[in-house]
Picture 1 (cartoon, helix red, strand yellow):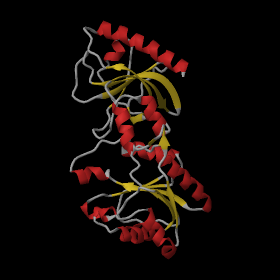
Picture 2 (tube, rainbow, N blue to C red):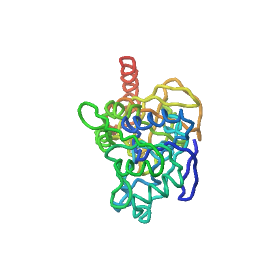
Picture 3 (cartoon, rainbow, N blue to C red):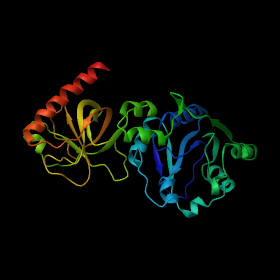
Picture 4 (tube, rainbow, N blue to C red):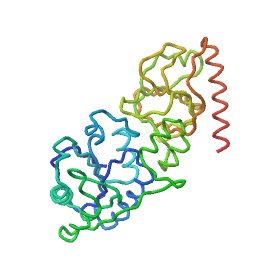
Length: 305
């Protein structure tokens, strides 16, 4: 998949969807399914989003994201998207009139033949652009428009805001239903203090960036992908209070059937179930006993689903 993070570029014959695409949830996947269908016309599929979450600039503070830029790229590539445009977002970008956004960027730079947007999507200065405006210019610029309804699950709209709330509550199964795929953390395996090795519970260590939204600290039932293979495991998100507390939370995974060194390898850990909160134990032996109980509980969980 081609990745573009620049204001100056030129594409040809594209079908486009427009949005934030933070969680890449069921609603986003409906838009992406429309793109996949339009690719049959020989058009290149494009997801147009912004280099930074618009809420970061407009609210004057950083907002954590469900998926990082690298995670988002990997998901979209797997779903068959040809190009991800992460347009640099700034005060100047926010000031572009909606009509100019259509004529100069969507038509001029993307050479757009067709676009799918949510019916509530807004773009351009003062958020004046929407599906109705896109339809008004469709004949003039010779493109098609599909305005897509919000997806609902259990009667409520699927949204990134809803997913964040469920994630912060540790409701992983519900998060996965809303996403349409397991929530995950992707990254390169880091060197740790190797304390897990000394108690027979070695871990793969990931250090997520500060903008990554994580579920509550604690132990989770997970599956980790390494070199195209999937391994069951238990993952702790936390600061390791028993063996030397640290400042930032790590994502540490003990794989049940994997005993190789893979420092520097790119891995992806999928989350399935929140088992318990992070705890401080009196000593390492108590920690080890609890981890053995956690392992059995997670094996039972996966055997029962």
